[in-house]
Length: 359
Ligand code: PEP
Ligand code: MN
Image 1 (cartoon, rainbow, N blue to C red):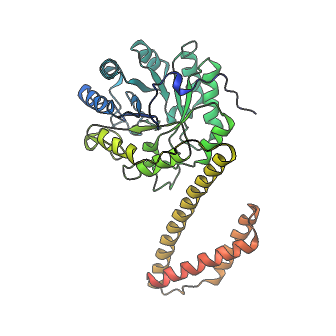
Image 2 (image 1 turned 90 degrees about the vertical axis):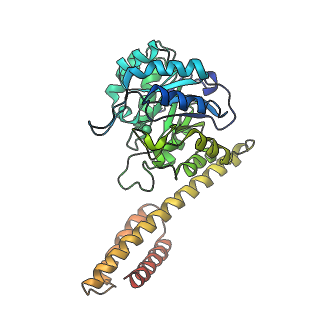
Image 3 (image 1 turned 135 degrees about the horizontal axis):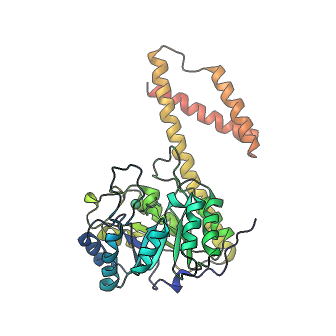
């Protein structure tokens, strides 16, 4: 079924013009008026920052975790707007959150990943927004389900929301390390292909989970020509009550932005596609290498076990089963037997070397 998103407004119709890349920054959670104001005042100095984000109602895994300050934070955001001129953006998960945000003049609402997974919740939110001309950002659902993401966008658009954008924050996948949430770039790229007028932002903070990884993911987002970045920023990250490891100070954000390589001028037509495909290939290769590294780590453990139990390193029967299974799966994906055999032999050779040298 074709994607049905009508009359989507560009980001420039409700966000100020900034030098690229467009950034929406702010703390994971509002914690105090001082923390919110100090962060916002510092962010105002970064020309790329177009809006201030923060969570008031926090969807947390455990009930004993900090759940956010709730509506108490709304007047703080009014101060942010008045004193810095920055637009404000808040996560909403229910009609009551929406009512409170709209009453206090929040400029942009976003729907978080945990809410987007539930079409009942999205429908309730969409109904509460009927006839309201407010920008709404829709994060991807926690699971890698493109249709569920598109469905949420369509539900909002049907109720008349045109200032609509998607935010890609990666997917919660078992074993997604080194990422907190695996990027699976082909999903937001496919969204862009299916819904060409829809702005798509990237949230490198929730993809990375750590400050160290942030520049790498932000650069990948810029290289793939997404429309902007949402980055978590705290005046004192070490004291943050949520997502402490991934938040950066406004100064660190300014530095990160200065180091990004921004493509100058657009290459046209086919060239741009070529550039994007190459970038996708680079990212996939990185994932393959990362997985091969993980595979060898386990192989080394098996080697040690064999040595301790005086089992022979080479187990021909097991290896024949692996070859047979991988050939079947690989050929089903269109890979040739010849290529698969070379690949499997190279992997096996390296595995035996690792077992011999690491035991
Ligand atoms: C957030 O942006 O702080 C947040 C909770 O994000 P997500 O919904 O992507 O987990
Ligand atoms: Mn967060």
